[in-house]
Length: 580
Picture (cartoon, rainbow, N blue to C red):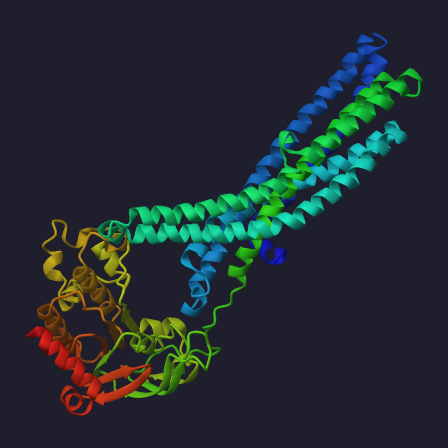
């Protein structure tokens, strides 16, 4: 896992190496200063030798300035390295998500992916900065200070050797208990983001049903759970927290060392076994050692928190797209013919739980095919197999007489335009949204596509016309307008196959008829698949497919199905009664 994450360091390796190098130089100088200071006290201050005081004092000031310089440099390199690492890690995660198939995306909720790209990355960034700076500084400071303390007085240095193992065992025990709790915390963060996201997306529904109090309760419940989990984890970390006032274990370590140094130091000074300068340097080394232990404690806490984040990030990076490019991809789609040959499909890749069962269907290039059926009859699932949004569980789908798995992914998806049930527009002008279909489309081509989709009439009624700004999700246009803009965008791709997945449900029957008429007269060579609930939307199709329970129940023209297919006839009669 760590090796995989560190691949994202890349161009920031130099900064990641220079940070600990500068820290090491800073530590070496810092541990040297108390040793030199003992000479200043014993040979300068105690003897009243001003020349020695000035000479050694000057050396100490010089070393302090050099130490400060290395400290500033290490901080700069560490900040640059950690920020760059987080940037690359975020980019790698996002790029991998872009390569996911729908099946991959279904494994992670939207809110979970957002939490991993934000909160989890921030935790890793902070941990990485601490590791390349603080986690290098503290062990070095601890080791060098112990060596210098031993060089001053070996017996006194044994005090530190007694306390370090006690603190180390405490850290390990706390880690074992705290890590599982933090894993639960971040999963609950996913749930919190999901609640907020649902609320903001459906705010109009919430207000229309006066469900604000219900939404507040949902948010409060999740927020309370995070509070309880964090409190549980923080209770454990408080035993060895980075702040002294919240750190019983660290307080015990500091006070124990100070009492022991003061007790034995005073006795040795009186007995002549230790000079005043040496005692002063030992006290300085005591503070350096204990501050190092305290900072190690802080790093340790950050690593415990970030470990759960690292595992969640690694899950995204480890996820392999289940739809991959063929070794020698086909780069051109010959025509818009489609053939389903013994096709079965399951979202869970479980042959005992199939959504589509033994589908055999042939569609000629340029045909208009209507697909109708009840909710849950797998109409949408069927057409999603054509551009390889999902791969079949069994059987084969052919486009242009070639297995869709043999095509280059970009080629097959550029040859198939899908207008989904949930129409998505992005923030930007109408022109910018249209150019998702063809980024090089001219203004004239955009207008022609909008005329085919019957969108030009309302666009030209806007004060800014095609430069009208669309809010996020298309919230400032109606459902019918949104559908027509999405159809126009799909037409700009100039596809071999056009799939309309119930994408005229929000337009009136007159506009629906105009769109179908335009399709028949202006784009006859494109294969058109129209999924609809209304018989009127598909009755003029060359072929109509009736779906039920993931199987094809009937195939034929409008007249043939009225005569031979019970389901189609019942739907037709119920809609006719509704019209009457």
